[in-house]
Length: 306
Ligand code: GYE
Image 1 (cartoon, rainbow, N blue to C red):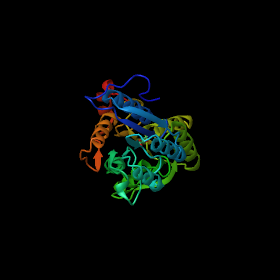
Image 2 (image 1 turned 90 degrees about the horizontal axis):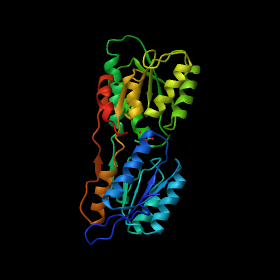
Image 3 (image 1 turned 180 degrees about the vertical axis):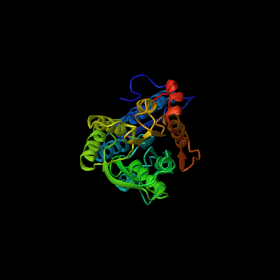
């Protein structure tokens, strides 16, 4: 797919830019909104987009990016499914003279000359916000608070950084204890399965920290199937603030939701344009974000775009 058939409007006298974009997959509402945002922004900017969706597999992303290099696109952008294992491929792009923009998820590389900029959220801050809310929520509570963590895809930047930001924040209160933690792969089914397992293994769970809304929504189903009340018997915190997430929050089935904005398309196209014309750009572009409680969710829901 991508900006194929409908001829992209070309900017004054300049051939339109060819952008190869390798997307993670279709695992969550966040991801679908991110893909749509990139497609629309490319069309609006007159960028010819070759979009390839990797089904959550690093090898598919590697193949897509090699294809972009072969095709001699002008710019490559990608959201790496996991952090590590990209150096060789990025070196190939560099040798071919094709600039690479990392978006959404960071790569773990020792050679920062392998990409021109990174556009995305501060996942550590998101995890920290989740932990800080818990510290505040249980301020006057005495006794152990048993937390289970449904992690995002193992090895991905958001899973690694949300986990560490959260751990750092809850250190402030030794009563807050993570008793179990497992990969739910950022999907609803994953969240439901992991939560069902936790409920079987642990007789008492007070809090669920799910690394995204989809996992949290899956956990709600497992909790209800177990005869418990999500949001009441177990407090649930998630990240993304998709419309479904905020709806569950407004209904009281989630308790706190941290925003992670997927609508990166316009900022990405701006960076692509600047890279192409050799303008200087910052090494890191961070997306502005907030967090929601129940009342705040009700207020923003009518105009929520994703
Ligand atoms: O939170 C999750 C998605 O990388 C920020 O990936 C993204 C995460 C997002 O599947 O829903």
